[in-house]
Each structure stands twice: as structure tokens, then as C-alpha cells.
Image 1: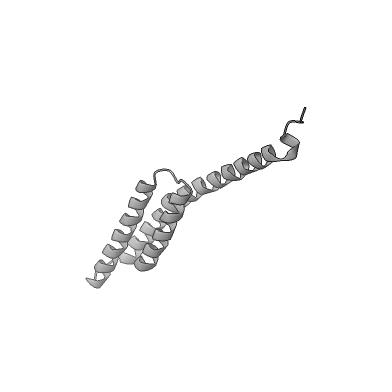
Image 2: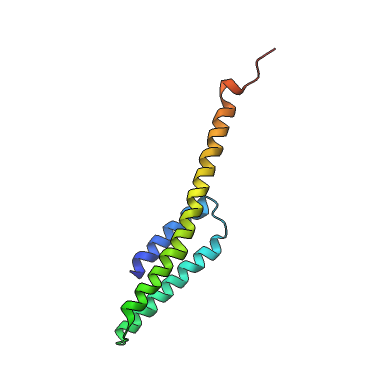
Length: 102
């Protein structure tokens, strides 16, 4: 899970930087903490720690709600703004919006 997440986070962070995601450094730190936490869970399992499945589920639930949904909401709003901006630019550059020659 940790290896998959790290590869995913690398791709996601590159994408977020390319679209101007605000506060990308904070977002990347959240990814780092996620990786550290999953490694800690793995080490606890290897040490015979009890109660790990419940703690893992609670942590992942928190991650999915607080991290993923919050950021997906921003991306959706950003995508809508980008599409609206592109439509305005396209309309402004169309022949209907150009002044008639004198």
C-alpha cells in the first residue's frame, strides 16, 4: 500500500503543480505524513501490535474524507473555472466579437 501510494502521490503532485494547485507544499507534506503513518502501521503489525486493523480503517476513513474529498472539491471548482475561462476566451476571439471594420 505504501509503495503504491508513493507512486500515486508523485504523479498527483506533478499534476497539481501543473494546474497551479494552491498550497501544494502543504498538500505534499500531507502525502509524506500518510507514507510515514502507513509505514508505522506495517512496523506495528510486524511487532505483533493489536488493534491495528481498526486503527488503519479509522486513519484511512479520515484520509479519504479530509484529504481526498477536500482536494477533489477544489479540483472540480478549478476545472469548472478553467472551462468557463476557456469558453470566454473562445467567444471573445470568435468573429462575432470582433469589431466591424470601418
